[in-house]
Image (cartoon, helix red, strand yellow):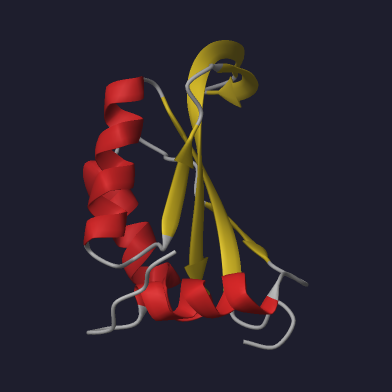
Length: 116
């Protein structure tokens, strides 16, 4: 991958650490993400839901994947997530180390083995 190329960072929040870990394990096992960082500390989210401003403590997932895996990754996150509307925000990677970006691509590639 040149520069960021096809690399994406996907942000997902979960209401529990158990759910965050389960989603992270599933998407890496299924090669939909190369790596998932799970925040052990909670983040405080402030959001509007059904006409009211709400607050919640959530665990943030940062998933590293490619543009070509986004549809399947989103489908798996929605399948496993407990929220009615799960956060799924994909950010394009503009630049990164050549080796790391190649590893992302290899790790989510079908039938290839990525290692770090």
